[in-house]
Every structure is written in C-alpha cells, then in structure tokens.
Image (cartoon, helix red, strand yellow):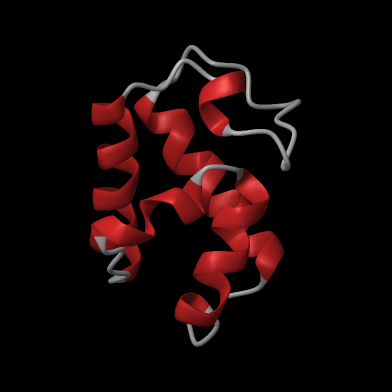
Length: 83
C-alpha cells in the first residue's frame, strides 16, 4: 500500500468512528485530537480497526507515533507496503 492509500484508509476508519466530523480539511501535521473530537476510546478503536482490516499490530509504546496523519502514514508505511 502506498502512502496515499494509507492516508485514505486512516481517514476512512476515522470517518466510521466519528462520522459527524468533517475530515476534508485535516492538516496532516496537526495532531488529530487538535482537529477532530477524538477521545482515548476512539483512538483505540482506530488501532483495533487497523489490526482487524490490515493485520497491523501497533504496540502501546508506539501510540505517540500516531498523533498526526503524517506521522501515522510514516509509521504504517513500512508495515503496510506489502499490502
């Protein structure tokens, strides 16, 4: 999967978890929680969806690498490039 494919997959997952949020103008460099109404359970739902859909494990100590769209794509790219 390409970086753009990962970006779209993340936005799709977020849209399913918080469907009332407008994701059209998400700034890839700004933390999700500063732009979108995500609580800690929503964040865990995102991580669980990544595991369920793409068999990607994200250890808890790596959660800080998923703070922004850009950092999430960078983190997931090596894990998902073979998909």
